[in-house]
Length: 493
Image 1 (cartoon, helix red, strand yellow):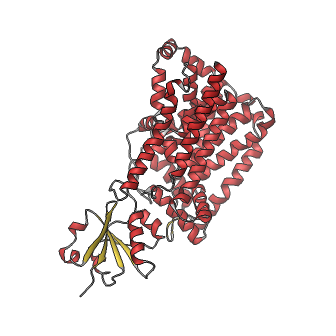
Image 2 (cartoon, one colour):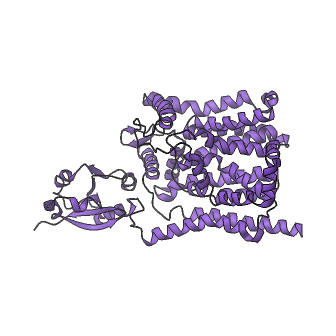
Image 3 (tube, helix red, strand yellow):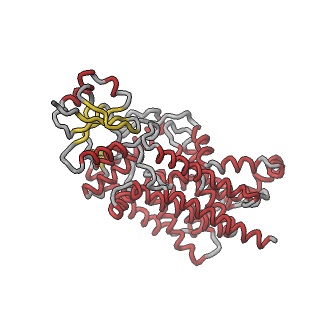
């Protein structure tokens, strides 16, 4: 019966959705903080807690971090303050954002369609590859995803939902979302929603009535009060921040491959247009499932007749989702330096559109349990990878210094000692050592520090055989893990 089918779908999807979220939560601390980006942001937050400086983030002692705004670092530092400095606390803010964005997807899907639709869309969001990954990683992208999702949800519900009683509140949510996005990543937090909304308003000729629908004056004032103080204080404390951040990070980085002005890494040059390939991967397995749905006979017939596109553009809500999804893809099409994470702001819209396509073209969410199996793919693969890391935590392909630092701490057992990295020092070494790991450039630096038996050295695996023979004779290998070798001076007779 249709009623029984609906109840079954709701229960099944709810159970699967809960399983996905639980799987993400229990794996937060199941693997160490990895290099480079995750370790960098975790260490910046660790330094914030150590120095009690909640205005200027530092990438190293005395070196301000200008590449990103403060919000994500605040969240991680606050989590460290509450739960201690560890992998679970570092990733917890991203998990809470992931859960909250999934709830927003459910709410907007439920209110525009029905509860089963909302649950299906939330399930598609939670189990898509990049959303699931970002739900437990120390990066700035989850906070931007939150800001864009809040602003797009707030705008739609504040201006166009039928329940007039809550419009006023959601109107302010739109401006709070803008503020969150700007504090998470900068101007792009306002540009992405702006692109989507302007395109949609133009298509549906809604400009005339827009002024009456949202609290523009008080909402803008609220957003400015949330954003401007930190930017002003940061420029006051570290002059030059605004120029580097707004010009370098928002124009030069994206226009010039391998941008030489990057103070904190190197540009990720990609062929222009790669963002569309990234979008396909980011939405896996749902991007493939969506393509399969669109290739079905009834879908093909509607698409070829032009009725599907016409219906899509005529449907105000679905067209709104399309512009929301397309904004980051269009913006980054000509960018020279991009990452797959840049697709995150459109993931909520992608999940809602996927659920809509399933329903529009007559596919039940639990048809032959295909929906449930598809939802489980990414979590199962991820858990398998975590198990592989647990079985072989020293694998070369997993870059983290958690194991090396842990072994060093066990060997020294609180005695006065030091650990020195030579030739290269991964950022996770700073995070796990609390910033106490030292660095020397070459073998001469190792030789100059051989006097203390409680001084340990770490070198890349490929460097160890190439050290001078007389120096190697004075060192013994303690452990080899994650592409690095921990060494200790041999006791002198």
